[in-house]
Image 1 (tube, rainbow over the protein chains, first blue to last red):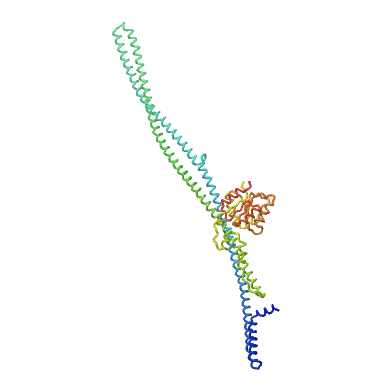
Image 2: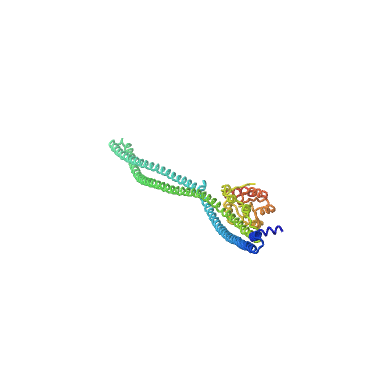
Length: 387
Length: 122
């Protein structure tokens, strides 16, 4: 009964109706029981009834309006959240697809780069190997060619020595020529002497016969000496001619050899210089390639870190999508409660926020929730705990 | 012969990023999209180390880890948890489940490679 009375008192038409009844009662009490007071008492009564009806109508309209509002609010949240979640999901999927393709392509580029750098490193080892590399080969070649040039110089020294000997032999030939002339002179003098001896032997007569024989033999001997001298002179002339030819040939040979040696030396120097330039350029390129590969590896590592942020973003968006679902449910529940006659309650925002927070896994999510800055620790610093 | 590492993560791009880092260090890489997929890939396959995410659909990382620790062929295979979570209670949970290391994303490639080299089976 009490509950029914309280419920009755809460109805909007009740206060004005009872005010009207009270007014009618008051009028009757004040005016007495005559006809006019009864008529006058109808005025507040009818006014109270009219006010009650107006209040009831307004309350009904207000209630319907609020119900419609709550219904529209619930529908709006459901529709909007549905569209927002669809957009977020589409964006996540497109981003994931794009980053997947990007990382696949990036992986292929890294593979190609590593193969190229590996090949270049092998070539670098080919250049720098102290036993079989290009630099070592160049050094061996330089040594070997230097030995050849040294040998040629040694040959030239021998040839020059031989030329000196030939020159000195030419001098000897001149002496032989002189000696041949002396022999011829001696033979001529001997012949004259033998003639004189024969003349003296003839002048002496019989006593000079023995002397004449000696003179005759001496004359024969001097004649032979003369012939021998002529032969010697002829041979010396031949030897002289041969020596002169040899001297000329050796002189020419030494001269040409000297010129060829200088030419060979210059050519070897030029070729070695070009090889040295090429080797130096290759070494510089190899060093630059190594330096660039170190830089590229650093860039690759940085890119690999950046590619991981898509996963974090995707997780955050996934949790946002999931938490957005609670809003339509809360508003629908509120609308249903009101429709069933319950009063409108306060939305538990703190409870909703705590429920969202329970799903957080990253430091920056907690930081955003509490409107504080996330520390750099944990974002890109790669914590590793070993157990 | 190159050692094999199984990488388990529901994100294809993350599996690829880990793969690039490990292949660059000379490892062969197997991939699994979640715990169940990873278990199917392990059948008869020699694996020297496992890297697993924690939050995955289907079978999550901790369940996968506990399953591995009961598998006769893989119970001694070291497992590194690779996750965005940095909460200490979760790390203790991973340690209790049998993980050998906990790496928070995003990871530095050279640090992950060092961890793999340190923990990999011979």
